[in-house]
Image (cartoon, rainbow over all chains, first blue to last red; front, side, top):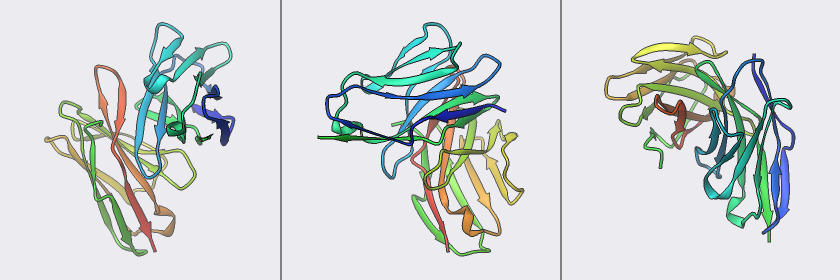
Length: 111
Length: 112
């Protein structure tokens, strides 16, 4: 069974600093990978996805992620965060017809 | 905006009761999935419907059941509610062209 590990439960960072949220997955087959963001009391919003092609994927709100097959990682990055980026971020891998999610990383941006 | 809507937004029930949650998918998305997100956890897959038939199920007991209708709406039914059923229930519709799931805002269920 596929699984996703998000290595940090919380990441505090100052405004305008860069951030990386780490995600590792387990899979022996080709995968589709996703990052979703969840603001308080809301559903999940798609940030970006990797289906195939270029390993560097750009998403909304200035986020990007890099697919690394040899390290089975799909880390999310942003060069300069804003207060409004404070939210919980979920990495997910497709497994047949479902998504398998990690436990989430709470990004706290401080002024 | 994903075009996926859910109702109600919040719901309070007591143990042993039954509940029905509703979802309206984007037009043309003929696959809908339901997820349960307990507090502090990632979403867990409950089941998926494709063209009104169940098309995969996660590790949830039979008291969790669903329906999908031709008008892209769907339901999640939970019988004999337990305290541990308290969670955010998320509905997602899939774009066949992009193989991507788009989520609704969720229904927060509290079981007392």
